[in-house]
Image (tube, rainbow, N blue to C red; front, side, top):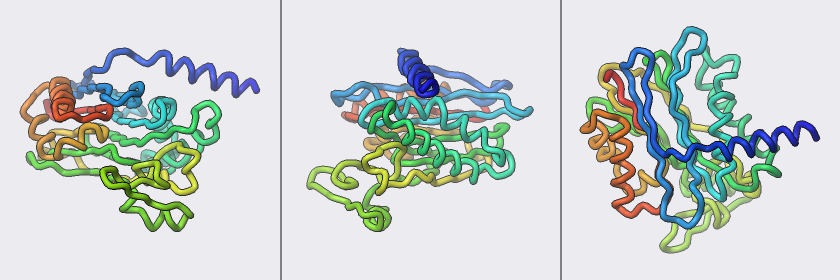
Length: 283
């Protein structure tokens, strides 16, 4: 009972302490890598459900760049929980430095189990996630569950580093678990007529038909890569990858680039919450 009370208290403080600021920026210790982020509430009639992570952190004489977008649905409690716990859970894995891919996958699954075990406090909502961990400015590990996306610029060409987990793409897995994929004209395919993604954190009522294991990709951050963009589907629904990269590369300041991307998405009548992190290498 005491543990439950403490969890409720700390979680309430987390939600209450959410900054009213929707923009920010930072850089690594040397100043050679800079980032900026912007979160904008969409036009849908619900509270803001997107959360983010963007920071550099020193661990074991290594500098890590930690970036993430969490796009919630049916409330903001699950993405708020992910903001506080997912990346820290990844870094706590004993094998992280030797086997980042396995550690990331393991932490995604264990974090989802934590969320489900606290469903009384977190509600029945859920969230997508896209995370990027930059190790010493040299190696980038990207993982995702759901339909948020990571894109890098390689020699100016957009390279998508994530795969959208759409119900139609994973229909077999959903049906094998006793679920179904429905499609109504004018709408997108949905799991059991409800959820527009086939993988997510939380969503307890649908979890028996969903997955929460991530796709994990990595790349060397060599001289050919100059930009990383993480964004929720509020951006990607209305903007192609290459156009987003072109805008981000034209604007030297990554915060101004993130602001421009979200402003353009709003201009194109994106109705969802729009969250964007832009990282510029070798500033």
